[in-house]
Length: 367
Ligand SMILES: Cc1cc2nc3c(=O)[nH]c(=O)nc-3n(C[C@H](O)[C@H](O)[C@H](O)COP(=O)(O)OP(=O)(O)OC[C@H]3O[C@@H](n4cnc5c(N)ncnc54)[C@H](O)[C@@H]3O)c2cc1C
Image (cartoon, rainbow, N blue to C red; front, side):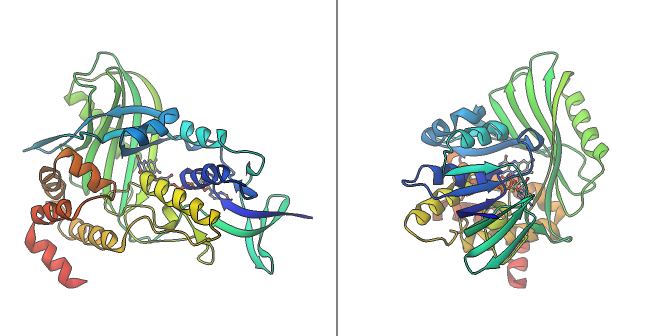
């Protein structure tokens, strides 16, 4: 026995649940099942993005922190941005997924089981999920993509902590503090101060190889020590590895969404806002009877991001400078637009002008 459905969404993470919530709003909603084997707790992390007032309000059920200012620093410089109308917003992934689940209805439901196989058939695709089979007219696959073993990665380990004493400035996010050991690749500390006593501190590397856990934890401890921050309680850990290179879908025959579907920005590892755009537009297309997945990141941006990453790989000694120069060349609002894939031509011109010319030209000629 199998159940007939209009749409199967494989994976109930950021993309799968965002698409499901959008489909549930359609009138009538398509008969949809989201297959997700893991609990929200098991996948809990923070998803951050730059958002305007309207976006931040629409996400308020999941907002854990929101800041107007952010900074990047190395041993020589400190760049502080004020985002103007755009703020840096950090979401609890668990609350975001619950918020999406709250919007589902009888037609759009989550099945708490993983998909084992997907086989094409006359009616569409036949999915086996545990004991049960489903016949779906359309399938959207959001399973994490396959990553080339030689690809550039952003990998990190962090702690969410309570501090004994209040930190001096909880009003500013540290996006990148490069004043840490750079001997194994580009390395920085990322800090979200949720309050004066509550921080997320991550040691992040941009390189091709993961490091042993003590590499990241030692960096965090040294960074905290140097600032006289002592930990009263460790609340949670956050670990991740995000591809900054071309990826391939688990099943190239299926339509992919999310990180596997071209929504991951290769130069930064940010995906949340691109996933929002992709899934909102896809739901509108489905309503109009079209099922092709929109590409949320343009070919031009992908080209520039790849060029940027090639410079990071070939000229590791310049890497932190490249980020600092990029940040220095833009105002907070321009930077936020740039990171969200909404840079104007002028924003791009400013960034390109700020880059070290010879390495970029050399890598450009190699394309
Ligand atoms: C720890 C971490 C922090 C991040 N922080 C940010 C951030 O701050 N800002 C930002 O923009 N981006 C961030 N990213 C990048 C990106 O936004 C996330 O990776 C995001 O979760 C990608 O969404 P997705 O839906 O494509 O994949 P996921 O959210 O990973 O969802 C894929 C789902 O597929 C499920 N799955 C796997 N196998 C099967 C199967 N056989 N059947 C059914 N389901 C299956 C998994 O359990 C998972 O829930 C972060 C990534 C990580 C790992």
